[in-house]
Amino acid sequence: MSDHDDWNAKTIAEFRANKGKVGGYFEGAPLVLLHHRGRKSGAEHVTPVMYLADDTDPDTVYVFASKAGAPTNPGWYYNLRDAGSGAVEIGEEHYPVTVTEPLGADRDRIYAEQVSRYPGFGDYEVKTEGVRTIPVLALHRRRD
Image (cartoon, rainbow, N blue to C red; front, side, top):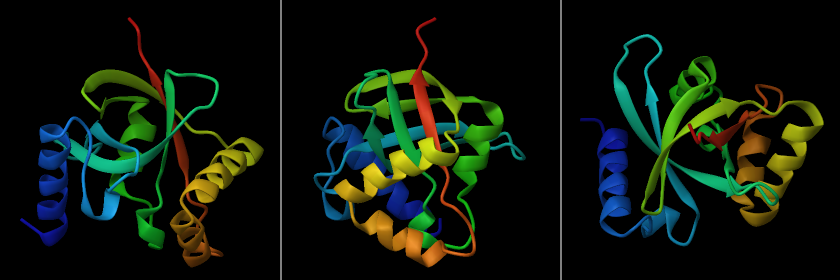
């Protein structure tokens, strides 16, 4: 198990043991566990990331494929985008979602709101400038 996988496993275990709350790097931040299937491997994955709740739609949250400002997008972004669906754990809830990708001015508005709340996301944007635009995905609760 890589250090990254070990860190994710510990974060996931802490999240589940504490009703969605964790300490360390994510302490006090809104955290979601993304459930997604590898588009190449078919393997099931769970990835902890920060989210932003939509101000007007309680059934929508946004996640940011920042990868801490790395030059490439994280695998979970492609898995969710390409599948168009997945599942999330937020707090003690676990539910299926559909996935859309806000673009242009919508993406910029959502990302700017995340930066205003968590300035580290602005640092990630600086690191990726001229390399890639950090994608935003909208996750919409499915009620079927």
